[in-house]
Length: 135
Ligand code: HEM
Image (cartoon, rainbow, N blue to C red; front, side, top):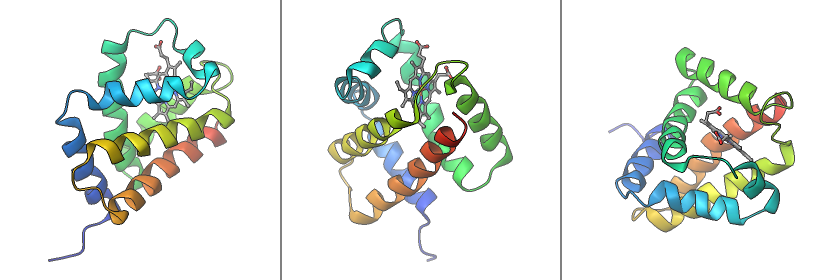
């Protein structure tokens, strides 16, 4: 069998985590607790909607990293909504997002390995760098 790619490892891990309805809420709990600036940004957010959006954008991240044109288009639109003229998410806030995501996956994925960790770092690292460059 061919070796699993980062994208395969990432998507399989995401499916294991998101089978538990507590996964995305646990991510937001950790993310919002990591900085006051972040919790302030989300003070008016409806988390029922936000939870579904995050799951979609994690799937999009996998597609964008492997060059899917639809996923790259979506990534561009999301980076625009986060830039200085819109949500105004400063580049230095992104490491909180990345750290909260990795820590939450480590907690929820029963098959967490070094390889799975490296796949998450690679895919989310790409997305975070993309958003930061477009600030
Ligand atoms: C690369 C990492 C990130 C991804 C993939 C992501 C994804 C998303 C998506 C899909 C939405 C909903 C659609 C939209 O408004 O564009 C959203 C909204 C939002 N994001 Fe992010 N985000 C990321 C990082 C961050 C960071 C670091 C912050 C820091 C505070 C942040 C703050 C927000 C806020 C305040 C909203 C609006 C929530 C509302 O509607 O009330 N995001 N994000």
